Length: 200
Image (cartoon, rainbow, N blue to C red):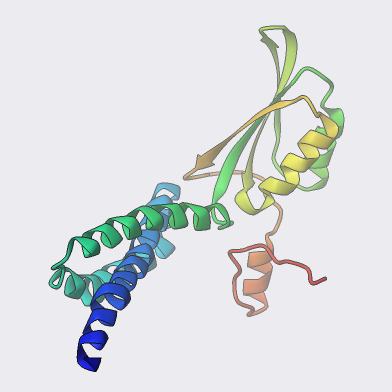
């Protein structure tokens, strides 16, 4: 009886959960790797690719040979779906790469332009005509980790401004402030890909 309970516990609880969690890790790494490839982050994409394939060969291939119950297929599919969700959620908090910020406003943008210059950020201003009249278009390539702070300033100076954000794979020239990651590397400190949170 004890042996039967032990087999039942493993077959219907431990193994399905193992399949689910392993698939989440595997698919999450794959999702983040694809996003890094799209952004041109070669080193991190290659590193994630190594661990993704390693997990597949060592763990998932072994599990696949023991899929003898429909329950395993359900947990396998659920892990795949959850892995995509988790991978995208993690990617949103990774401050890697650059983005193109485009701001269109009908009001004056002098304060916003001055802010960009004070922060040593490249900015291009163009006069244009929109559907409702005269507008000004501001275009800048910025580091992803600075995006939230800059969007807050855009809303502060021009609350009704329209803005769009696009991923940028390659930048040949530009004006960017010295990043905290580069300063950390020069001092021999570990690089950070997530924003620091101040303690309470």
